[in-house]
Image (cartoon, rainbow, N blue to C red; front, side, top):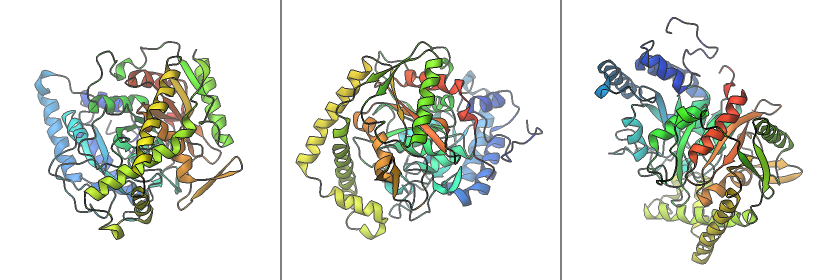
Length: 477
C-alpha cells in the first residue's frame, strides 16, 4: 500500500473507511505508525486554513502507534484486534484527556490539563484508538456556528468562507477533510448533527445517557449527549460500539457487521407538523428525493403527528439557559470572569440567570408531553424522517437567513430542527443526502425510538448503500 498511488487529496489513507484500514492493518500491509504519520502530515498542511484542531498530540500519537504495533505482533491476549485498534481519531476539546490540554474552546480553561480521562476517552483508549488531538469548538459548546473568538472559527472544508457548524465543528471538519478517521462530539441542541450535515458526514446523537458524559465540560446536563462523527454509517457504528454504556436487556446493541443483514421493510414517519414548515426549497427537494429512494428500497412512508412540537421551543431554550448559567456560576466563572467570555456566550449566560424557577419547571412538564408525542408516533413507525437543517452552511458573520420569504436568525434555524430530540432524549442521526447548486452538503435527519440505535443505523446504512453522497469528499485544499 505504501508504494501505491496516492489519492487526489495527497494522502494515501485519508478517505478510506475504518473497516478498510483495519483490514490493511491486520494483513500487515500498513502499520499504525503509517496511519499516524499520514494523518499528522495532513493536519500540518490543512489545519492552518481550517482551524479544526486546537491541540495536536503528535508525540503521544507516535508512541501509541508503536505500542499498538507491538500488540499486533504479539497478538494481544490471543484475540484479534478490534476495528478501532490502531485507528487515529480525534476528540472534541470538552472531553477530559489525562495530561492533554482541554480548553472547551474557552479562554478561561486555556491552560487546563486534566489528571484523568473522560469516560469516552478511556473507552476509546481501551479499544486501541490513537488520539491525534483535540478539536476546535464553539466556546463552552454554547453555540451553533463554531465562530470562536479565542481560537478562530472553523472553516467548512467544502467552502472556506462558510461555517463548519457548531459546537462540534472542529470534529466535523477534521473528519470531512480526512484529517482523522472519526471523532466524538457532544450534542445539546444539535451540535453533532448540525456540523455533520454542513460538512457532509455522518453524525449520531444517541439515546440520552447511553454514552457517558462523565468528564465532559457540560453545557446543560439534562440535554447533553455524546456521540460519534464519521465519514459513513459503518464508521459511526464502530465508534459507537466502543463508547456505549449499558442497554436495557431487551434492546439490540449496534453491530456494524449486522448493518446489511438486518434488513426489512421499514415503516418511516413523515411529520405533518413543525419540521417541514420553514425549509429552503432546495433542501426540501433533496429530502423529498431521499424519501423517494427509501420507497424504492421497499419502505412505507406515512404521515405522523407531533402536535406539541411548536410548544417545545421556549421550554427547551429555558432548560439550556438555566442549566448553563448554573454550571458557570457553580464553577466561579460567571459573572466573576465575564470579560473572558466571547460576547455571544456571555450574553446567553446572562440570559440564563433571568430564567425563573416556574419557567424551568414548566419546561420539564413540556419535555414529558413532547416525549409522549414521539412515543405515540413510534408505535406506528420505525423512525421519522426530517431535514437535519433548513438551509446549507452560512457564511462567517452571517446572522440571519431568508427561508421562503421569512427572515430567521441562523441560531434559530439550526437549533429548530435539532433540539426536539435533545429535549426528549431520542436518538437521531444526520447522513449526507445531496448537495446544493453551490456545492454545499445537505443532511437528512432520521429520529428513532429510545435505545434503538441499532435500528436507526440499519435504516441509515440502507440509504447510504443506495446512494453515493457519502463517497463525495471536499475538493483539494
